[in-house]
Figure 1 (cartoon, rainbow, N blue to C red):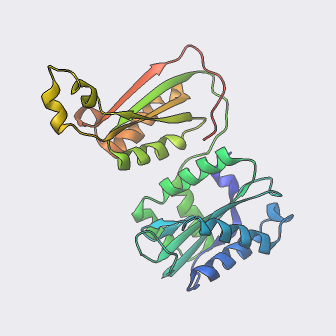
Figure 2: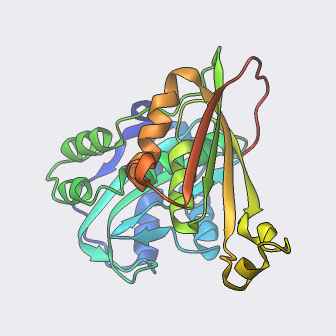
Length: 270
């Protein structure tokens, strides 16, 4: 699936002047309903689903950005839309800032994996604050859509890979680990799981010889990401990780290994 195919031109609006969250959700529902893909659901159904999702926690994650989303039973394909609010709208953001850039996703009920990949891809695209500022300043719907696609710059693919590599990422910083998980989640056809481990010093400290080290041991958990990826994407996954950590050869607290696999089949639900 290509992002350009699910970003619906009729669901893009630059320069809205809405001034509260309730009105924002109403405008999103009305904008989404313009897409023929949603002809079997009503505007009220879309609004209710968006509101229910917001009760779980705000979809505004800081820096003036929000990604309202929901899943509906009678929807067969994804609908992605854009809405900018240059003056900003209160959206209960985690950092208290008003939201100026909104990307919404209406998803099929039974495609949670693709939904997660799409959310991850969109959130990564919106981490570029310079690109977001350009989108907010867009004067036309067409310009807004073009700028967003340039920032996203990737497909969300479900293609079957012939050859895979096994990637293992060991991280002791939880904040960095979350970013790395998101980076891997948007790779084509990636399948992964997360394992929680313990710092090795904890066990060394149990030895009589090394007991002195137990007094000052680092109790932080070691987060482990284990993923299978298409072999052709090995360099890309390392590039993405290093964009977060800096050079792995100069980094402490993060370790990455990549191994060729003789056989790989099946997939995991994210």
